[in-house]
Amino acid sequence: MKNKQKLLNVDRNAKTHKGQSRGYLTGILYLAPANLSGFNVCPTASEGCKAACLNTAGRGAFTTTQAARIKKTLSYFNDRLAFMAQLKKEIISLQNKADRQGFIPCVRLNGTSDIPWERMKFECFSGLTIMEYFNNVQFYDYTKRANRRELPDNYHLTFSLSEDNAGDAARVLARGDNVAVVYRKDIPNFDTIGDDARCMVFARVVDGTTHDLRFLDDRGEGVIVGLCAKGKARYDTSGFVREFDDMHRKV
Image 1: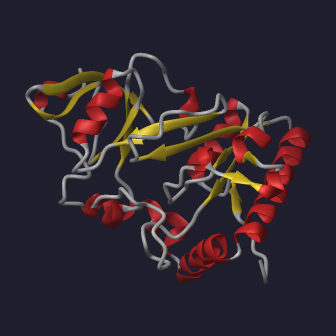
Image 2 (image 1 turned 180 degrees about the horizontal axis):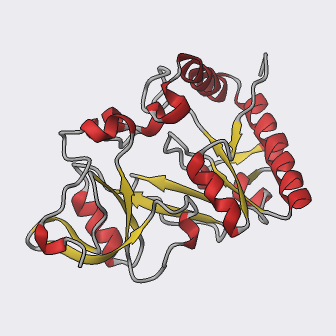
């Protein structure tokens, strides 16, 4: 990969920085979402998701940041071996930094993408997946791909609700896994998700704004992880950002 640039954003994000108080140092890979680069890295993204993507939140609003993310995405597709070799070096660097500072390293590879990393094996990782190779690193992501279920122990996924996948989200909750939901304003205590009256799941909502470490969220019962609309998402009218009625309002 020519003209190497840093691939991982290490706690230069206000939300991931909060993880340090819980003992974690986080590295996030931000690619150009959907098909912004000419390559689609979010194959199941809804129109509302694309419009409200956090790609434009915070530093993402800068033209230089957008150009850098497109460049990284093109490198991933056009020079995969060099890209993965660089990523390997940066995860090792993250591990070393975390060790020096007394933190536990963790990595989000899909900061603004939805690539099934758990299925992909690479030569620079001795023919293993990145999770198998770095088996002492905690990986986690959000996904809109309901078929990503066979996961290694050190990879945690939180399904993400959009305006067109409520049925999938309800099934995820019903099997005991968590679903992230973006709310317009306040985060309720409870909410209901489903695509019709025959498939509605009532679930407890936990506040997902206090940190980004989704692998620390309650597991097994299927909870909704409430997030707050940011950036362009605050103006969403597609239904991607959810309103809640008085029945679910905080008590």
